[in-house]
Image: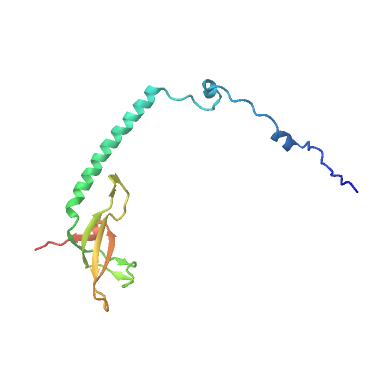
Length: 157
């Protein structure tokens, strides 16, 4: 009976294997942790408190401006408007390349304020229009965002 001899490779002495087996230094106590970190030391407690008070006062004054802006736009919501500017919209599937100048619609939403915060909307008024299309029993409803100088309010008599 023949015995099989297994050859065993000698341990590797390459740098990478030596680094893998090197023991890491023990962690330092928590009190000296800040001494080893780069950068400035943490701010004292009083400075953090003053910063928090300054930020809350700035937010409060801005929320007053947002509330005033929302209150100024509220009477315009629900009113009928007529488009005065020459505008073409391309998002109405049943009537592509539609010129909406002279069309009348209803202001549905003011979109510059969202969840109590000011947003930078270029076209702040969302207006709903209805368009009668041949072959459709109901008129097609679509929405368009407009600036205030692109429409006029229609006096309801």
